[in-house]
Image 1 (cartoon, rainbow, N blue to C red):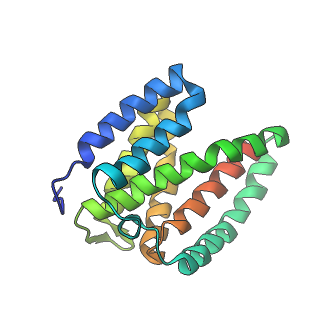
Image 2: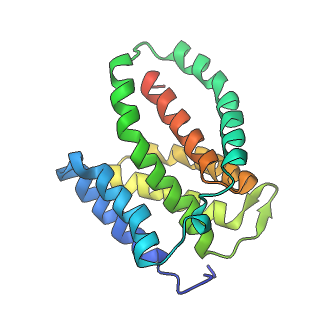
Image 3: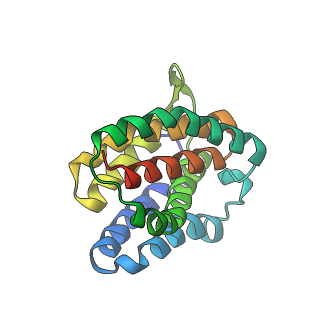
Length: 190
């Protein structure tokens, strides 16, 4: 992996995973704060990343691609609603409030920060090197933090989020898509 700068992202990645795993187990109330601090504040303050370099730009294009991604996700609502027997409407609002800072943190870190640190090139079709690396590391983090091998299924949505980031040049598109996926899974766990 060739880094553009000094490549502190691997150290930060492991510190983040360990901190998140501890937070999820023992300090669940503070998990969103820990994630936001490590994945957003640390790259900006300590590694001097400006908001544009980590994807906070092209909001119109990002919003457009985010809405398009929600339209693509809409069949999943019908599939999951047919499979799922329980709808957890009461949890949807609480989950959305809890998911928002987490989703912003995860997308800022795994899309924005990673893309600003690693040299990118196309590998296969629409899949780039950074998209593959960030998706693998995102999925691995989910598995390690929650000790759940089923979290490896997040790899494919993560590839889609990376593609949306590359297509829109905005962090807003993968944030919208990520919120959509979390919303569907919370409403219809399938």
